[in-house]
Length: 333
Ligand code: OGA
Ligand code: NI
Image (cartoon, rainbow, N blue to C red; front, side):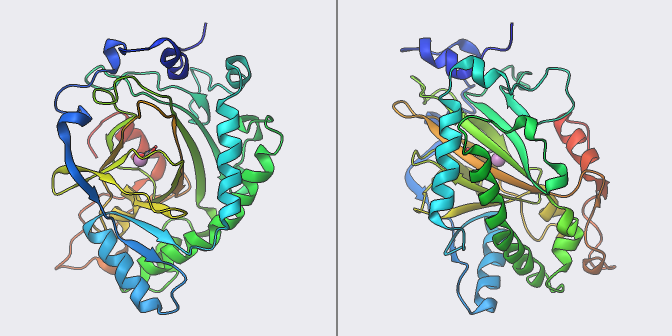
C-alpha cells in the first residue's frame, strides 16, 4: 500500500478535515491573515527599454519584499496556458496512473509524484500533493518522472523550459548590476549555464476548512530564484513586516521569489521571501513553481567582490547540496 494522497482524503472530507491537517492557532490562516488588504507586490515590466529603471525596480523589490511579479516577460501566454493544461490533466488521471510516477520511499531524489511523507515539526500535514521533475539542463532530465499522459505533456513542458531562459538571464543580469557587479557575475556565481530548473506542480484539492489548514506552511525557497505561475485560484501569501497578506495575482504575470541562494550571494542585500499558501473551499488550486538552482556540487557563498573589512560575510559558503541537507534536516547553518 502506498501513501495516502490528499486528493483522495479530500474526496471523503465533506465538512471536516482529519486532525493532522488542523494548524495550531499560530498558523491558522483565518486567525493570522491581515484581512481586507491584499499585498500589492511590485509589478515590473521586463520589456521596458530603460534598463536602469528595471534594475532599480528589481533591486527595490528584492531588498524590501523578496518578491515581485513580472509582466511583458517574453514567455508567450499560450506557452503558459499549455503548461497548465497538461499539468492539470495529469492530476485528473485515475490514481493508479499517477502512482506510476510515485517517488520511491527510500529514494534520495526529490523527483516524482508524491505527498510529503514526514510530518512537520508540530506533527502537522500540508493539504497538497505534488509532482517534481527537472526541466533543464537536458543532461539532468529524468524522463521517467515526466508523465506520458497527456501525450503533449513533454512537448508543452519543453516549450516552457526553452522560453524561461530569456527571463532567467534578464533577472540575474539586473540582480547582478544592482549589486554593482558585471551583468554576468550573479549568474556565474550560481553555476552559469549549468543552473538547474526544477519544476514542481502543487495540487491543492478543495478543502472544506480552508480557515484551519495550509497548503504549504511558511518557508523561504532554497533556490536562487523561483518563478511561479498559478491557476486562477488565489492563495499565495507573503509575510511582510511580521504580518501575513494575500498576494494579488496579475493576469499573465510570473511571480518571482528571491530564494536563499540569492540572499547569500548578495550577502544579505536581497532577501528571500517568507511565504505560504492557503487552500480554497470551492476550487482546486494549482501552482507551477520552477526552482532555479545552482548545481548540487557548486559551492555558494557571499560574492567575493561584495566582501571587505567593512562588509564581512554574513553567511557561510556551502555546497548547494549541503545547504539543502542542513535546511531539510534543520541542522544549524
Ligand atoms: C512552493 C510554494 C506557493 C504556491 O511550492 O514552494 O511556495 O502558491 N508554493 O503554491
Ligand atoms: Ni515556496
